[in-house]
Picture 1 (cartoon, rainbow, N blue to C red):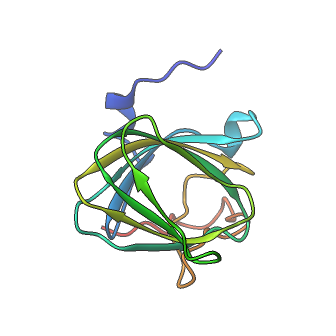
Picture 2 (picture 1 turned 180 degrees about the horizontal axis):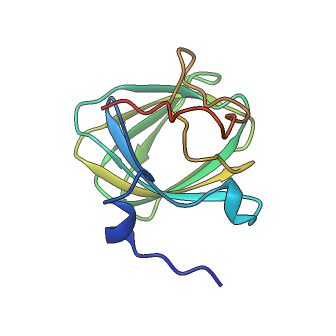
Picture 3 (picture 1 turned 135 degrees about the vertical axis):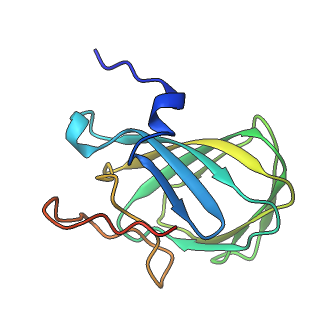
Amino acid sequence: MIVRKLKDIRKSDKHVKSEGWTSDRLLLKDDGMGFSFHVTTLFAGAELHMHYQNHLEAVLILKGTGTIEDLGTGETHELKPGVMYALNNNDKHIVRPETEILCACVFNPPVTGREVHDENGAYPADVDAEREPALSD
């Protein structure tokens, strides 16, 4: 059994910061669950261009409001508490938080904990565990 406290994760190297968001990675690849689980905060006013080419993601909005635009279809969907979206086709998208958004995210395959978005808005397929973390402040 794995038991972790969000407040402890937020004080550790599993609290990842990048432009427009922070991610608290509660479960990672090394935990052997076959997925990773994150609590993520998206900052109001950010425009987050993402395209997870190597991962599938499901997101549940817990707090806050905004929109997600599916760049493949041009559709825009409202984000608010209780809304879930799943990027089941590695969908290229833009998230636009109107207020700070708190969400729970699941990634498959699991991330290692060292990832931040690359120039395409993706996480790499896997990050070599021997490398230094690619975290930005």
